Structure formats: structure tokens, C-alpha cells
Length: 123
Image (cartoon, rainbow, N blue to C red; front, side):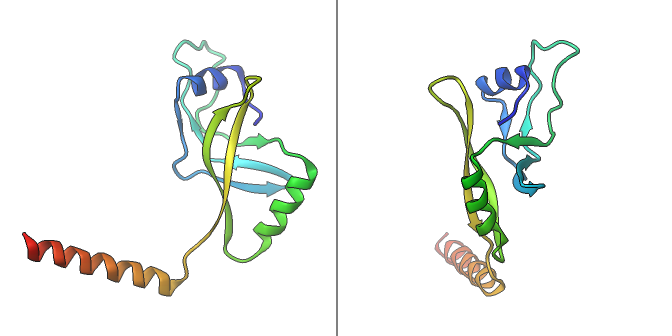
């Protein structure tokens, strides 16, 4: 990832949130959107913005492979975790997920309703 200095310091303190974040391609480059990295508490006026687009650095072959999979219907690329590699680089682990179909959503909702009724009956 391309990060500012205060972003790295904030990440080392564990101040990141993946809520609503996702990855997308723009002009053959991979970007992560809506990743919230809190401002560094000891930062000055040059502190970073908490939510901004950040460029992800990958090899061209990896980018092509991932872009091909994302073109398929229903696939999206989401961040799973941030960690620091051996040389101190901040790395982002990504996951390729497929959204649920409408009938899958109905089935999940039906199972939740049944479980809720069973718990209510047992109380």
C-alpha cells in the first residue's frame, strides 16, 4: 500500500477499520476505498485524512489475474487484514468474494426465523 508516514504510525497502534471498504480497478491500478485509518494522535497539522483512496502495489501478473476474476459477475475484492511484513512494509490481505443470490438470502432468513422461534419456545 502507498501510505503516508502518520498512516503507518497509526496502523502500528492498530487504528484501522475495514467497515464498508472495498477494492476496485481504475486505469489498470488497484485502489482501496473507504479504509478508515484514524489520524495519528501525535500528528501535527500535516496529519493524514482518515478516509481516502489508497493505491495497492502489486505485480502486473497478479493484477491481471485478479482483474479477470473480478470481471466475472458477482465477484468483489475485499480487504481481510493488515499486517506488517519482515522489512516493516504494511501489507494488505485481500479476499475474492461472491455475493449471495436472492434464493440464498431467503434461505438464510428462513433459518434465522426458525432458530429464533426455537429459542423463544425453549425459554
